[in-house]
Length: 224
Image (cartoon, rainbow, N blue to C red):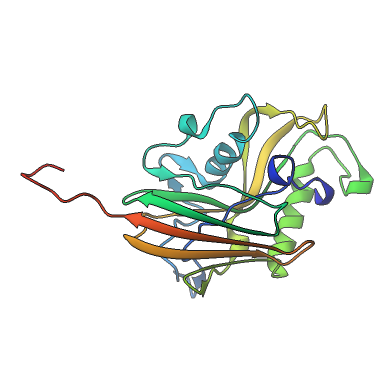
């Protein structure tokens, strides 16, 4: 969906607060700090988490308070309209972090638009191919504390929305699927973490997150 990437709420939504993206090396997970893309967490798959995260940005839909369990933290989303962005995040210890590197909405039942690369009603297939080629070409980059995140392509997934969504820019198109590069991070250690994301396609985009993880309060008298 090249000219349909969501920017801000009506363009590409981007969020990167990732740490230690797994890389399959000789059959081993080289970065155990992140949940594997084929695993489930809190009873949901990566695609389902991504759909729940993206779903909350549309007016009239449930807020993240309705969708975000207490043990999963949803950081702020950055606007791709601003080429350089920065956020400070404070996260309670013991919380997993659901993030997006790059994401969009798409449909499995859209109009046929050859000029946009949609030769059948399943836009998802064309959009998925675009996301994968972008990752393979190094079009997206993420690092944590200076350590590059690897194999982002492995984390490109899709998930169905609870029901189709209308987007003002394309009225009448039943957007029913979230697509993106999502990272579900295991609870981070207390302290400071710096995370950086860069898009190396189109208009350059840079995003930095300064994350502070607050430790649990001390135990007193056997109770917190």
